[in-house]
Image (tube, rainbow, N blue to C red; front, side, top):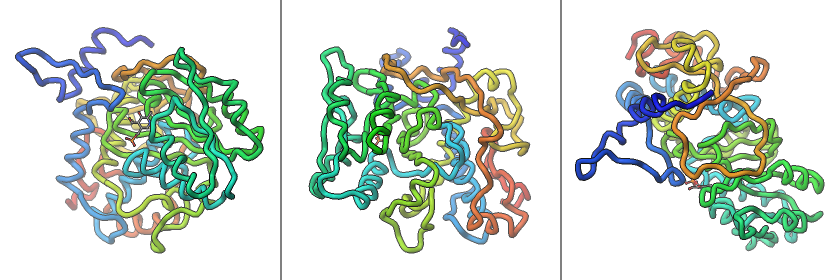
Length: 381
Ligand SMILES: Cc1ncc(COP(=O)(O)O)c(C=O)c1O
């Protein structure tokens, strides 16, 4: 599917920040590696949340139930976006760095002094610092060298992975150079010694569809502000894995995935924006273009808006990254193919969540679609 000049102009019109002029000239935004601008749909979703909802979770009143539902729907959208089997594998946090630190503190509880973590010189410091911080706990951190051409030295990677390796942490793509790493090779090496694989998809997710299942990764981290959303970090953990880890958490927090690594109150308004960002990307896929007005597949037959903005399709799956070069600034609305089966759709909310949402009829269906505001389905606003 091609991205035409008309598509380019249309996508530019979706981003209010690009309407600015400087010295009477239109602006060009070229700092993609540091984050994208946000489309109107994302701004609207965040604004609508504050205007119509804005409540804490787990309350017995309509806006609180709507907030719980929003968080759940955002998890479902994020699971589809990442190719995860279900929403249970997606946790949210302040940003990628914070989630990586939380994960490092949980993982080190499983490890012994002398165990090893492999990181790379090509990686963003956010995927190095959390692992380097474990040196004070006796963990040995080994760094894979970068070659002069900007690619990882894969023979060095092979040398650095040993029987003591517990984790190989590397990026899918470098935000500095655009290098796309051979993560399939890293997966094979990590598996050969029984180590976890952790992928930093912060830069990559802005350019290519992500498929955690095809990547066969144990952990994947990314950040919504790199793909048209607000500042929210996303963590994927292989099914069952987070449940086994001892995370930093309050006693009152659910002791199960995906909740047990989330601390305090989530940023609900930002999560409304994350959902809208994923829906915005999906709207540029083949089915998003041809099927305006349909529901996003992860929402079954829930009623959606017939407003002017496009509705959504499921973000696509793709085969694992092969070594090449990613652009260092994202292509707005890059098309994504779609092949997700209904079998892998996210399942229903956890029992702990469900009764809360279904006790009253006022907040059991979607409070907000891509272009709908946070009006309660019952009209009880
Ligand atoms: C490749 C990569 N990894 C990690 C990060 C850190 O992400 P966050 O700001 O969400 O902590 C960045 C931010 O620029 C990045 O480009």
